[in-house]
Image (tube, rainbow, N blue to C red; front, side, top):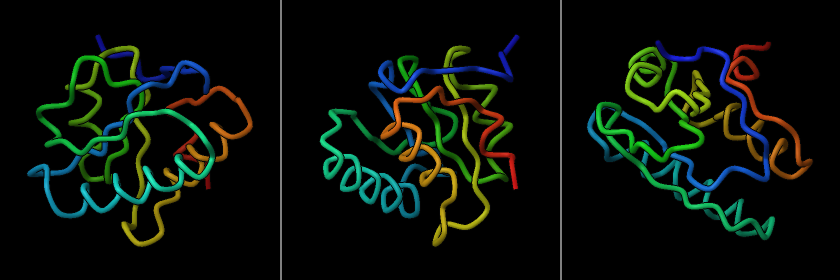
Length: 115
């Protein structure tokens, strides 16, 4: 059973996966934007894009559009935190992730559901 309330501490995040339907396009753009922002923070975290059905077993954080979030939770490893967003152009999940990483906070799947 997948842990719907996975928690990952900021210092334990090594791999962030942007999941999408086919593994190209929007997830590639989102992954590249996040890479740039993490680099500016001085964080050495690997960011990749992947089809939702091929999320790697070592993923710590999975960022997925809300329409793919449930599929991502089923495929992602139990310890991975799945963050969902509504709009690719204003990706609130990535923004929350960056803030939590910068502050050294815990990251939870539930955080992306808050208004």
